[in-house]
Length: 462
Image (cartoon, rainbow, N blue to C red; front, side, top):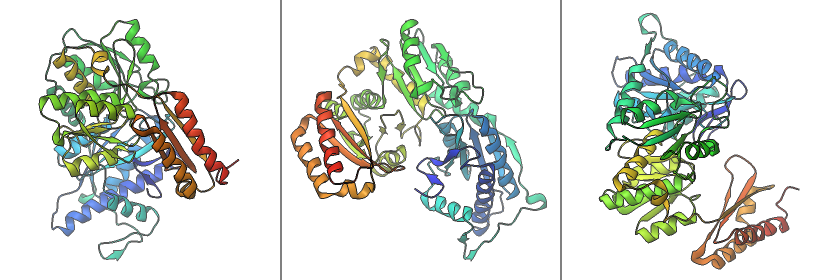
């Protein structure tokens, strides 16, 4: 991760550590950079950048700042307005944009925001380009054979323009509808839009496919995105599904790249369970490429046991949908994702897409003619205990020989009936100790035994 950009964009509290000036400067750089790339290739066309945003109050500020920077550098800015992250990725790739920008802090509170950059293939921006942007923000830009103290402004007819591009969002909606293989007629479906980017998209898709659609948390006011709503606060959807006797419910996050489900009994179906039912379905259809589902190291041990019983192989990546997608693209895998609900279907999308995920769950239910609770029944979630230990040096604590010996001892004791995972936090001075086993008491015992060694060796901050 860089100084400004993490694994999911340039994120921070609006006008604290992510300001309108940051957005303007990012726009200035992108407009100039893609124009310069074209000039170096002998092309005269202006660069084109497409922009979407979620429903946070600050998203308008960042949108206009980015647009000002882009057009000042000679790029044309196409505005999708309020839309989802996956829709920006789709439009960027399909309509031949030089890059895409999504203004969102995903599942974070309304006062946070972020700038996510998407390359011309609809994928997260390459690290090499991110590093160049960071060097520009720090006043140390050296590229194309020279050092740039300031970037030139576009003049006269070279100044960029803005284009209202709501038609791009509408074509994305049409694309999602086209993926529905079955009619949803007579299906009663609840959608929790988290007062976020899916509020004006998801219902249109389900209605078009024939569902009787019930929607909650679809009245954004700029400050209520994710507040007691959506995939991070799914208890409201659980109650709503049961109280109204619905067949299924789907909860999205602020920018709708995540989806969690609720079955007809009100039980939460998380990303691991979604990977299970969809992985089994693809295998039965002969469409599970390499017979492999891609997970992260944080997926539940019960998922791997269920895959073993179903004869499905699995890969484990570092935490982050970015790493899941990288593995999938390098190894030709069809489906992968995270427990949090980032599910990627590589045949249809280059990023996690919450609405697409909900459509695919519907497909499995309708093809099998079974309720969601029956489809997830073979998947047993193992009890899990995760404790964060604040330490003086997280790398030293994790790599300590005595700590490693205790971890190995726990792993041996668990055998094939559980697992232990010890890893550093990516953003805080923490070591995370996680154990999954057949009982919560076992989990607690083994987690505490590792933490005791970390404490005995003097790493714990008192």
